[in-house]
Length: 164
Image (cartoon, rainbow, N blue to C red; front, side):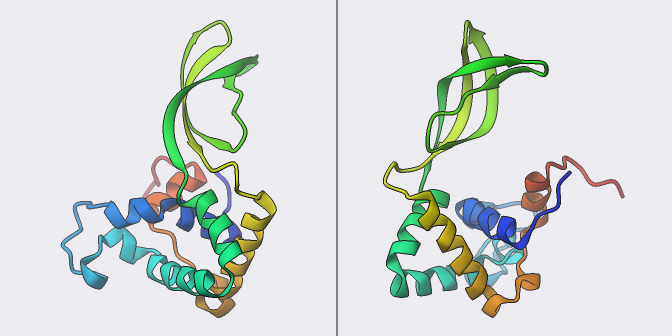
C-alpha cells in the first residue's frame, strides 16, 4: 500500500473523470449535482471540471497536453514484448503508454496487456506543468480539500479491501 500525494490525487482524478461520470453504483439515485452518479459527487470532480474550463480558457497549451495525457487517451488490449524476471513475466511497454492489466503470456517473448496510451504529440513536461497548474488552482491551492472517491482511492493505493 502506498500513500498518495496531492499530485497523485489530481492525476487520479483526471484519469478517473470519465469513469466517475458514468459510474452508476447501488447508491446512485440521481440525487447528486445535476443528477450525477454518487462516485462523481463523492470526489472533487465538479471542482476539477470547473478548473479545467479555466485552464482551457487561460492556458490552452497546458490544458491540451494535460487532458490528452490523462483524460483523452485510449485503452486497448495489445500484444507486447515481455521479459522474464524472478517474479515472472513482465510486459515491456511501448512508448507513451501505461500498463493497466498484465494479461496472459502467449509464448516466446509475447504477452497480452491492457494498456492506456496517449497521443505522440503530448509533451510530458508540459503535461506535468499542467498538473502543477491544477494543483495551484483546485480549491485555490488548498490541497487538503482534494477528494478521490473511496473505490478509486483504494484502487490507486493498491488495496483490494479495507479491514473493518
